[in-house]
Amino acid sequence: MTTKTVSPATVDVGLFVLRLALGGVMIAHGYQKLFVNGLAGTQQGFTGMGAPLPEVTGVLVVLLELGGGVAIILGLLTRVIALLFAATMAGALVLVHLPNGFYASDGGYELVALLGLVGIALALAGAGRFSVDRAFVGRRRAKREVRQDEKVPAAA
Image (cartoon, rainbow, N blue to C red; front, side, top):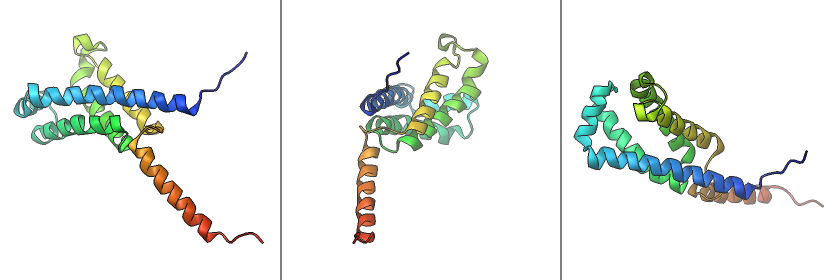
């Protein structure tokens, strides 16, 4: 039996695709909450769902979904935003979707569980090479390596 290794570039493309999918869905949901339901309607909906501090969480979730969706696509603060998405989806699962069973068509937790797990996967794996995160980390790492090289005395 032969095993093939996956190239790092393939993994990075896969992480980019995951970021596009999660970010795109989150942006769509944030857009719906802000421009279709309206902020007041979203806050009222959060009240009806039993969300804590619905006036505050309604605004925070809209900001997270819109701004965080863009950030995830860009690969900016990926691990933090992905964890916030996972936490938000866990809240939605417990407060709203769990009693409705699995299937999203019945109001179940199918979609929020998937989105939350994608968030956890990105929090663990990071953004990958094609990201703003990597651009900043790469620059800092290169500067740190240069400073370390300057401290090391040359071999005689």
